[in-house]
Length: 73
Image (tube, rainbow, N blue to C red; front, side, top):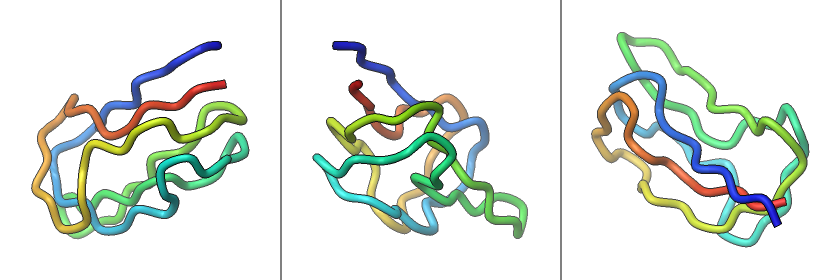
């Protein structure tokens, strides 16, 4: 089983979390939207996987490189 930690590329606010823990996602699906500098930046699934853990909440202020979620395949 492969586990991958997904971190934020930018600082901002978590605008939307599109899935829940244990949901299955397909490569290319939007996982989270981060609002930064009045833009919504998507965090995209890099491969087909299951969401093992989500570390952030909607409206949470986050920093660059902050862990967002863990995927397992």
